[in-house]
Length: 296
Ligand code: ADP
Ligand code: MG
Image 1 (cartoon, rainbow, N blue to C red):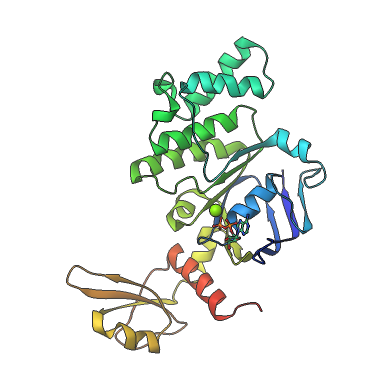
Image 2: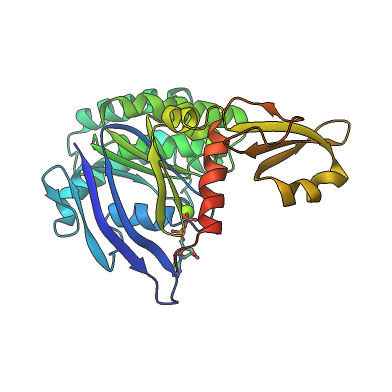
């Protein structure tokens, strides 16, 4: 089912414009919403999840008019907020059984079956008897996915689930999400470019409440091919280079020199080498363009 968002705006009471005329269509599969802190990711996700109202605009999911028929959307929705709060001292299995009861599954046999299934999908079956309160960050996030799978959602929204996870936990989490995302729409927000690169069929870059770019990671990267250049410089040459070139990123080498990446249609000067474009470049160019050409 297609999620269609039209002219969505939201200005908070303090005057912050968190959503500034968002227009986007999102189809089945993994969709990555990439943006820095304060971009408006959580506001957009809470609005789609019917937890807060926009000032104007419309959202439809298939035939459902989301803003006017919240209950219809909620039946199809699985939502994992950015912070999930405190967990009671209950085992994962007991807690999921409780959530399943709340979601209206009254048959004990049915509950046992679905709880077992979601524990297996999220690789938590072996630790099902342990208290969720004592889980690691990554296990808690996978538990978050397990609970939202209980009602077999068609639209899954997960808000910055990989923030704070160590590399192994992050990897395990992304694998679970990848499996879950094969038969529904998953909208996944992150400020980590690699999350999107590894996982998402489609992506959008959000900043200042606006969609700066909507494409596939491969296509966005491909469009920059031939336009990314690198050069190794001494650290005290950075300022001079910044004045001359459109530097996207600079990384220290072990000998204290810097590797700079520059965006330019042509070779900036003979000491630059051509580099393969990366999704990081796409992200930095989008954000840089946004800062240099702000909408007033
Ligand atoms: P992100 O999730 O991308 O970090 P948010 O949607 O949380 O972005 O925030 C977008 C902007 O709106 C930020 O400037 C944030 O400070 C502001 N904001 C978020 N929630 C509120 C709120 N309840 N009241 C006022 N301002 C808010
Ligand atoms: Mg957020």
